[in-house]
Image 1 (spheres, helix red, strand yellow):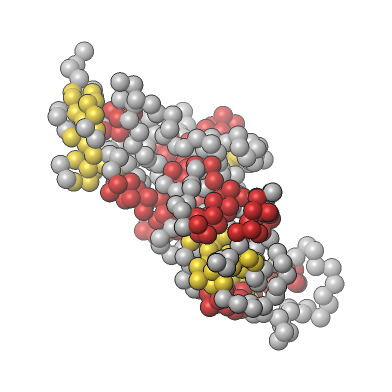
Image 2 (tube, rainbow over the protein chains, first blue to last red; image 1 turned 90 degrees about the horizontal axis):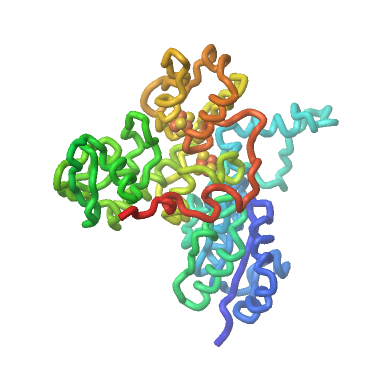
Length: 182
Length: 233
Ligand code: SF4
Ligand code: SF4
């Protein structure tokens, strides 16, 4: 039987959830026996080359590129998992949700204390750049998400337990210590 | 001494003082009924509804309902636990709860209930309401993004003449907690500490404090809320 195929991505996240995935330590050897990775920063496969079974999504959607990638994942993965606070509720990037985008951009590029030189008063607007959304969206407000693993980052044991449950079909083990929001 | 009255919680025989509420009596009998706005020795507010129990087929808030002789209380049932979980989820989406960046994380009672119920995601859509933070008093931040309007601060933090330092302002979904600036100026360090302590969430914060306990050492890192309440019989 062929192995289940896993894809992962980081949208508006900090890669902390991926770090936490690596935090399963030597179990990573077991993991590569159990599953095959496709599109993922882990193996640097940049485009889907086949249909996948499990897609792990880190980060919420803060721009048009995030939405595009998330929809690609939905098309190419049987099961999608929101991994971490940002995917689940926007996380720290969503702290801007109460502030108009224009004000955010002005603070970042014109008025902020770290702006040293922007005499042309330019806000980035090149066509090549993804468009910033009006607010940061939880992934499940954009596509259907099947499972959620909270945490910032989710505990390595939570990710491990969830992957094992998905791959083997066994019941997910959820001891008190692994479901945490920070 | 007045006769104690007999009642049951989930079939377990319990005893209460005359006039005692279900919640207070439950605690005396070593039974945990989850709650947020309840605080021992304060007049109950009945505002968070987490302590909903069922008596004769009807939902009642255990913190405001006095025990009657022979009362049969349902507490730890799948129906009630699911109802409580849904209230916790509603509280999460109706504020802005960014736990990873919150000073109260690990010691927060709302978060602890979400851990108890293993909330993976709220079933309701996030509202991301606009809330104002009030940093203007000398010792406290009022972080309204996290306030659950439980009135614990209003009921317990008072000056020598009995005046509350905290009060509600506005109505409906604009309702917000407010700190009286004149009275706040006279706050002692102890009062400020107490205010932060009695707030179940991270809405009242001591200035120049926070993140002083390492992860793993905080109240609810390893121990579920209510797990310290052990049966006494
Ligand atoms: S108040 Fe509690 S639930 Fe809200 S952000 Fe802080 S820790 Fe999380
Ligand atoms: S500030 Fe805290 S104690 Fe006061 S009403 Fe809000 S949540 Fe309750």
